[in-house]
Image 1: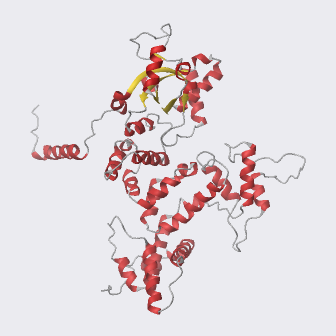
Image 2 (image 1 turned 180 degrees about the vertical axis):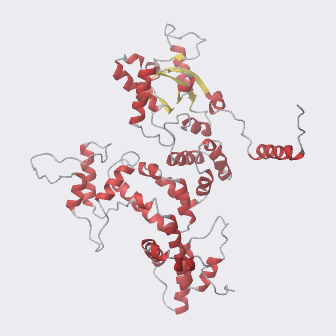
Length: 487
C-alpha cells in the first residue's frame, strides 16, 4: 500500500505548535512529580505511624473523611496492606541529619536491613531522633492502618508504613506542594476550595515581579490542573487575576465552610457583574459570624452545620427585632414538645459534631449573647438564578442613567474586554456626586451609593418576574443611554 505524502498543511501546524509549546511552556517534559523530586529523596524507609505528624507546615491539610478511612480499612482487611507497593508509599518531609542518624544506628538484624534493600527499616526513629516527620500525602492510609490494627488485633510493632523521605530544607516549594496535591486517589478528589488553597500556597512562595506569570504556569503544570476533568481552569485564572476577589476567595477558603462551598465558576461569575460590594457584604457577614463563635473555623463548621443554623436562626424580622432566646435554645437543644426538666437537654442531632458537649454549650451561649449574628441562607446566596441576577444588574445600569446622563455615557463607554473595568458602584457614586453638584446641594452621605445599589438589586431580584416580563426585558437589554456623550 502506497503511503500518502504529507503536505505542508499536514506538517506546518504541528511544527508551529511544537515551537509554541517549547517557547511558552518549557516544562512540558511529561516527567512525574516523583521523578522531579528524586534528587531530594533522602531514603525510602519503613516508619512507625506514631512518629508521623499530619499537621502541615505549609497551608492546612485536608480534613479526615471517616467514610474514606473505613473504606481503606476494609480494603486492607480483604485484600492486604500492600505497604511496600510504590503507588502506596506515603510522602513525608524530614531533616536530612535525622535520616543520616537513623540509617547509621539501625539494627542490622532488622528485617530488610541489608545495604542493598530498596526500603530501610527505620522503626527505631523515635529512640534515635525524638522527632516526627511531616506527612505530605497519606493521612487517610495512616488512620486506616490504626483502624485495621484495632479490627484485627495486630501488634503495635507492626504499625508501620513505607514512606518516601524528602529533604525538608532542599525540596523546592513547587514540588513540595505538588507532592501534597491529591491526584492519585480518584475516590477522594480535591474540591475547588482545596485547589484554590494550593494555588495560594504556590503563589506565596513566588517572589518578584514575575509572580503573576509564574502563578499562571503553576496553575496548569505545578498543580496539574490540566488533568482535572471538568475543572474551569480559564475561569480560575480570571478569578485569580481579580485582586479583590482573590483576597476574598482566599479568606473564604481559610474556613471549612468556605472550602465546602467555594465554586470557581460561581465566584468568577459574581466577579464579572462588577457589583463586588453587594456580594462581599454577605460574605463578610458570614465570616464575621464564624469569627464570633468560640470554635475552630477551619474544622468545626461545615455546610451542613451552617444550613441547620441558618434554617433555625433566621435573621431579624421586618421590624428589626432580634431573634428570641427560645428560638436560639430550640436550635441547639430541641425539646420535641417535651418539658421534662429533670433530664439533661439533648443536642440537636448532627449539629457541630466535631465539638464535645462543653464546647457545644459555649457556642450556644455565644449565639444567645449575640442575637443579631447573621446566619445567611448560603444555599440561596451561592446558587443565585443567573438570568434574574443579570437582569437586576442591568436595572442598576439604568438607575445610573436616570440619575446622571454623563455617568451613563461613561458607563456605556467601558470596554467589555477590559481586564480592569470599574465597579458599577463607582459609576453610581459619580452619578450621585454630579447630581448634588447640579443641584448645588450638599454631597450625599458616604454610604448612599452602596445602600442604593443593594436596594435596587434586592428589589429587582425579589420582583424578577416583573423585570423579566417581555415588554420590560426589551428595555433592560437596551443601551443604558441614548443621550449624546459628554465632551
